[in-house]
Image 1 (cartoon, rainbow, N blue to C red):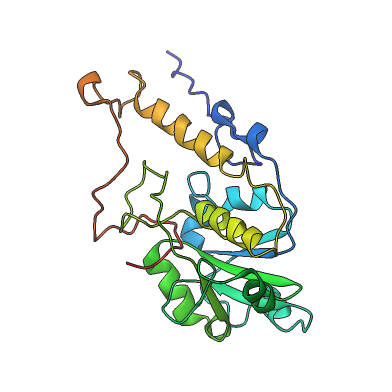
Image 2: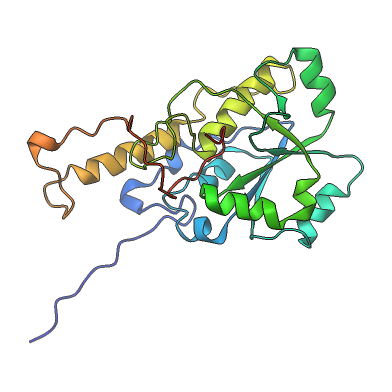
Amino acid sequence: MQPETINPRLTCYKCMSPKSTCICKHIHSLHTKTRFIILMHPKEYKKEKNGTGHMTKLQLENSEIIVGVDFTNNKRVNAILNNENNSSFLLYPGKDNFNLSVSGSSEVQSFMGHKPHLFILDGTWPCARKMLKLSKNLQTLKRVSFDNDIKSKFIIKQQPESLCLSTIESVYTVLNLLKEGDVEHCDTTGFLLPFERMIEHQLEYLLNPNNKNYRASENSEIAVKNIYKKTTERNTIFEVER
């Protein structure tokens, strides 16, 4: 008797999603003045089909991903930092940061300069802290942050706090603030669309009766996670560390 053949699930190697839930048709990359450098932890890179760092890269023409933990001696990172034509910043929460939410247009333009490069740590909060702690070159960067008053749409993942945002949501917020500061002029209308479609696909999977994780009808409603675990590490986020 021949063993039953198992057909492997095909993957789209652009968005890294299964071809059945490919989001590429929703990808419309923006051209930005700011260059976004996504410093991705290796653990996040391995699960990139569920993370938003790779998706953020696809949505931004002027961006790149660098994988690692300690970037102190990373040639590419140091090449960016040592370029005198660049103005480099780290997107990370803190009281003494330059707050894009409360700064006027002239202040934002003066602070960001003519060729801003924004570094973003993409990983769980413990991973992001470790990346910053080990990377001496990142510790010297000026930091920018923003005040967040929205809840993440990443409802299928548990966040450590209610106002934590995914990487793509954080970049979306920053882009809109830079637009208000007259640094950027791109149209961010559909920037989160691939992210929203990914969430929809995953919710449909959870509610599929043929799925082993299927939720019975009486419990099928999946609400926004208003109760956030304090001990979880499943977070791929930037915003204010609370």
